Structures are given as C-alpha cells and as structure tokens.
Length: 311
Image (tube, rainbow, N blue to C red):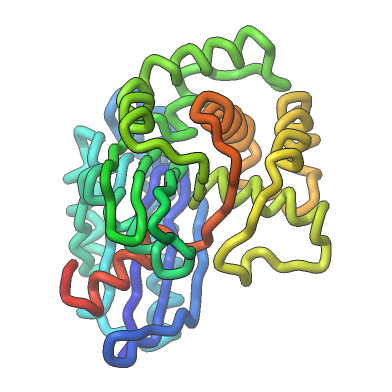
C-alpha cells in the first residue's frame, strides 16, 4: 500500500510518497514545489489571490505525480501549517482545494506541528538520554522542541518564519549591519519563552530541520564534501566553524551572488540570509556546541503517526 503526504507550507508545498508494509515504510518519492503562499500577506493574516493560485498549481503538479505512483485518493493526506492557520481566508483556499482535487486539508496547530517534527526527527537521529534542542525553520513559523529518548519535555511554535521576517524587515541587498541588529533585537524579545525553557532544560546540541536549515547544510556540504549528495542523506553534522564561514559570506552577498552559489535552492535565495541570522543567533545566544541537520521532519512524522494509527 502506498501513502502520500502533501505538506502545504508557507514557502513550499512538499510531497512525500511511501510504500507502507505493516508498521514500516520506504520512501519512494520526495519533491517540492515553490508556492510562496505567504508572499505579500503573511504578516497581515491573509493569502493573496496570486499566492492561492501558486498553491493550486503546486498541488496540481503533486497530484499528477501521485497519480503516476498509483496512490489512491483515500491514501493522500494534506497538511496545512503556519500560512493557513494564521490566514483569515484559509477556508477559501481549503474549499477550492477540496473542489478541485478532492482533498480535505488538515490544518494543524503549532504545537501539533512540533510534535510531528519530533516524530520525524527521532526516526533517524540518535537521541539518547541527553536532551537535544530541535529547530524546524519554516516560512511562516519556527518550532523549537527540547527532548530526549523518552520524549518531549518542552515545545513551542513561534510565528518567526523566514517569510514573516523578510516581509517585516524588508532587508537591503546585501543586508546592512543595522538591519541585522534590528532582526536580532526582535528575535531576542520574541524568543523569551525559549530562554526560560533552556534555563530549565539546558542542552548544547542543536538539530535543525527544513527550509533554511536544509539549504545551509547543502551549501556547506557543497564546499566541504563536494562528492556527497546531501539530499540522499538523512542527517549531516555541521562544524560550527563551517557555518560561521558561510554565515559571513551570506551576510555580504547580493541576491545575484547567492543565486550563483553551488547547490543553492532558487526558492531560498531571498530567505536564506534571514535564516542564517536566525541560526547564528540561536547558536550564540543558546550556547550551542554541536550542530546537526536532519532530513526528516513533519512529513515523515505524519507518516509515522499514520501507520501507527496515531494521526
């Protein structure tokens, strides 16, 4: 039996198709379509008509792929995250998706999203008795989870996605020092609950997933491991010194220079600088000593819960 997960994010709409056998699965297809659902309206709580159209086009493309893999309609799960849960016209988009594609979008809360992310990460990352900090960087929100092998001890979803930050601060090209400081001041205030949580549950290990984190890991791997296809890997250890070197390059770069970087995802050119600022801020402020990227997140977590009858 085959299952398909459509993850309707703020910047991209992702597809995962898996062959399910009993309580295990094998991924047979993974792809994404840049939709930029949050562009122009993310901080005003609306999805603009042109953003909706990009969403419909992305889902249509994914539905064609799903049909090619012979996945039944009843075995498709569509999940909506930050852009949809914060939009006043999300129901308009959901109704049209139902009419066009016969899909009922499950719009999940930020807390639910954090749980699914943990359920994805724990499948491939060695998480032991020592606590880890998991960070999923999305376009609309960022989820932080503190957990160990026994489960989650704290989780929180912040409306601090990279599309939101770019929309709010409209950084120059290249970004200026004052703009960086303004973003960091904003993050310091917004992340107050995280400071408190890490005071109670300290950890120096950060596992990053999704969006800008995947892009940054790919850019670093392109330089340090040029023969490695990171997209075929479930995890990648990032030397903090390598991240710091890339961070400096990104801050000094123009959009055109970023677009020319080896292995740059075109859909991340305008978001990766704020993503790097965010990651650098977390590493510095939270005193992170070990940095890893994980290729599993929400989609794999949802699949895990579906086959174990928890979704």
